[in-house]
Length: 208
Length: 326
Image 1 (cartoon, helix red, strand yellow):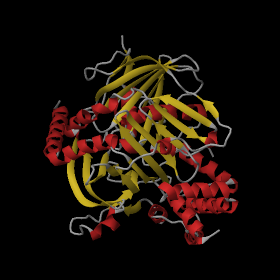
Image 2: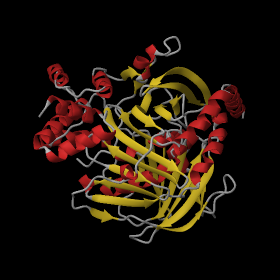
Image 3: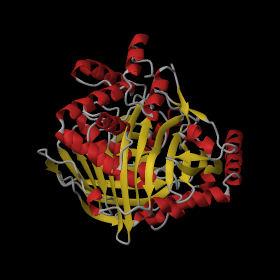
Image 4: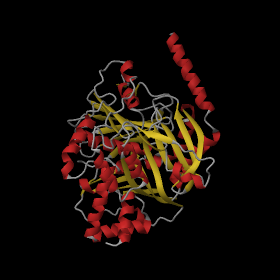
């Protein structure tokens, strides 16, 4: 593989490609076995950075994570049907941020593998070092804005709450399927972030 | 009684505060943002970040006199596509070897309601102009949208200065934490979108086409807010939420009717689904996927589920207030 091809794959993992470059990358993956393997390695790295448990070796870990998520004290799964007081209870923050505890060396090695690190992935690395909240720039604006309007651009930092799941926290496939159908139907009315609403469908975690 | 008066006073104060901070410039920008998303041609890549998970997605959107066509393509992880036209949403998930084709609930008519819905949101959110900055190498203006209560989420929206297209959306909890973030990393605006770019490109696999199509048995828009033809009554909604659409459809595979009712305050919305019991399992309690919360119960041999981009206690309270009309 050439250096250009490697850069192309790296950019693909980062989601930075578009137009002809994207088409070239897809063509490369469909015709070049070495490129495909390289892409999978990059993808693996990206997934590890993103906190995904992937591959056959980590199947058990994935199931454990799923079980933990399923047992999260979601806002009302076990609520006794009393009247208003139960409904007014504050929403519980799922305490999943501490579920995965790897040795510090592991993260150092992982970060060393971050060939395809994007600003998003870097933000993710940042989140893993925070015990409770992941502090990240509120937006790429914070780092990009200075050149044009430095006086008016906020350097805002916001907090990502503890780990939410991009998969319904249910145990039965039948329920999950029904909720996904509901989600697609509901997306037509998603409101303010309307143009992004279907991203949740695309990003939905596949069955582990 | 005294406590009730205090609650009312507090609500009125918060409401008047919200109204006073709904800057006309910000509300106007919010409305233009809604229109821009429907009328512009664009081809870009955005990231969807939720907690530690990041998904890169390419979006291609075309709009002309015939309506909209939109294609989303995942760029990392499993190859997936979603194609949205005026009448259909097609989801292509090769890893599941399945294609779902769903008729869009209310066809092409609904987006025209967007402007009026956004205007109606102003009493329930403080909508102000924020900072200037850049997203995807484009100058952007920030809109800060803060709810007056904890039954809905807030937003930080970054809008393109030139075209008013939404470039970044951060969804915030009541503690100001970012629950989800959508951010364009690159975008080409006002470009010609070739027809081929809007066609699915996932192929070469033995896909099982599972047409999940349903036949509408009734379809109408609520002409008056709060009115519904349903046998079911919703006893509680967050302040400012009103019925904006409803429909009933018959499932193709079991002939059961599913009723969907959509409630919105102009920015946030919740769908209530009511269907006759048919399957073995149903959501009983709450579930969550990112910023989307769902809550379900079974009542009078029906499954009742609320799904929406609102906090969990909001969908729960709505569902628990639903009763069969006498």
